[in-house]
Image 1 (cartoon, rainbow over the protein chains, first blue to last red):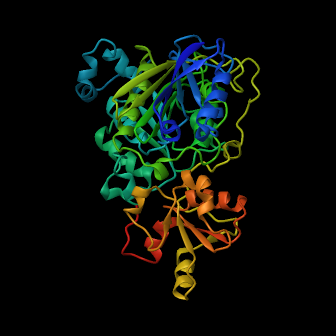
Image 2 (cartoon, each protein chain N blue to C red):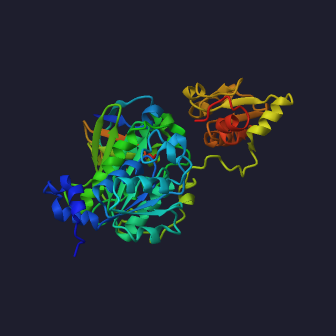
Image 3 (tube, rainbow over the protein chains, first blue to last red):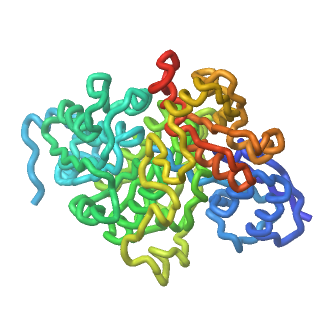
Length: 82
Length: 384
């Protein structure tokens, strides 16, 4: 197993009801796999996850990016205000 | 050959001339530069003021709106004396007061696929200070296709984002956000509110980045996204990558000309104060008032956030915030005539769609929201 920390930003915090969560995941889980797990834990994120920006250890991550133990995953929603 | 500075300009820009990274050559370069600001609202206000003060020789302003009293909490280029004036004219007069040596060109129209190329082609760099997704994608695509830098900023309540999207050197907006979020998911400032000083912080960062790019100094936010939170006073950075599959700047671009951005995003390119019906599901404030005066009292469902009801509310209305509505449908009686209410009619239209899809048939949307009710029926209530 490996441990990753997931951070929520902007209105994702309100939707998730949490600023961060630590998860124990099977090795070699990808960003896409993590999104599926988050969807189960936080159904309120359903509409947000497809368009959210994902950063792993402060690097932009694609859906096929593989997570490693101790990774910090940050989720940023698009915002449009100006 | 760059235009020279006059003696008056040398005095005006003295503090710039003293820093070697700008100096006389840099100041001349700024004088010979041009910037197009998309939007003269929260982000555009500080950006326009600082760019004018900095001596950018030619600044274009695109906006179609007029100054509203509710803008002044953050849109500091405008003033109480310019309420109801065109925003571009209000902004121009303030900028020329600050610096009469620059040119300010105004484009009093929405930025659209029809006019974007011809307007943007005349400027070195664009600043995205718009308030909606369709115009953000449009601004991005125009910059990619014309090969211009796009200095991006965006805000939500206490959170801000900034970057420089310059497809020749790094990723573009579509590399980060290939698809817009579903319509209605991300609240605008008019719906969700925003800390007034937040666009000051982000718009000022945009002005800084624009000057750096024009001067070729420092490390602009190319390939980096800045994420700011005012409550925590935190500045986070994410290193970005060009997306090889990006539809406009990737290896096999599909988008080679401007598209219909309102269709792409599923929403209009500008805030409509009042949702323009079209569904046959709207009721006006006056119609609702008449109906109630005649003794028909419908179920009034107010879908705003609880703290908004402290500002204004219709007696007897039941509050279920839009975000909680789907989970609380069982509390409602689908056979009863129901009027859905929000601030200006946008959230309630979304709630209406939800109710209709859940089988509620006797449901209507209060057109223009509680603000229309305050304006047309109950002047004792404030508009906000």
